[in-house]
Length: 299
Image (cartoon, rainbow, N blue to C red; front, side):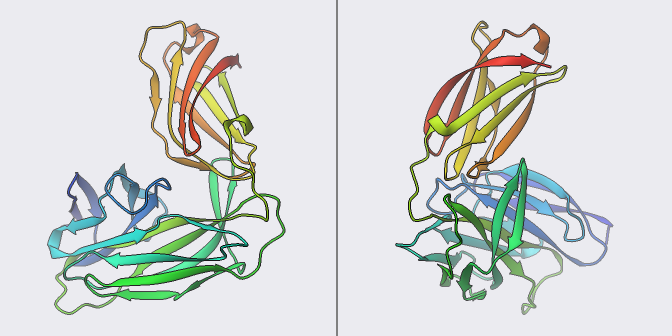
């Protein structure tokens, strides 16, 4: 068998060809998915994924728009439907249900279900073990076309005047299956956001979102600070020079900014030193759309 193998991942909407490194006849890789909060269930339009070597922290390849059903070369297939794809808990609603459905006609999936506290430090997401929430059952086996309800609940509410964020992590566990063919296998892994509200939680607004823009020799550096008591989700950004007829510079993005946190984008733009001093930023977010005039700070 060749040392380097090609994995062909097919969905109803796209084809992704990824080069993988394999030493033996059967190698397992992980599809890691981040799901768009605005969607009600997993579809081709609301997942972004990367293929990961379990022995490395770096993605082999990444793309967007992964269909809920993957048809993998060598005859292996597994698909998982999740609904809803985000969980909101409060003192009034301290338990929530998430339904998992195995979309495969042939493959059985075994999934480990875990909960973590989710924090941000700048652009870095940090997961920590938590005992504030509980999930049941912690392990789920799904036969072809089977559905399973998992429940997430608050054990105790931590003292906070802002929304606290957690992640519900589903990881497929390797299992021996009868008549499994040799080749490359894909294990599904996904993270669902879980938000726990304090006793009172004001609605998030753009008034509590601050944008800044400064320029250096190579980039426009765009920074957002979320002063709201709850998260915001940035789905799209476009920068345009109000004194130019050029098309807006699109910034593909899908970012959660948790309460009180900051996120930064570095945007390469040619001839940035000749740019006008005022730019217009068009923002698409879960709290609406907004256009913001931003002066450029040089330095």
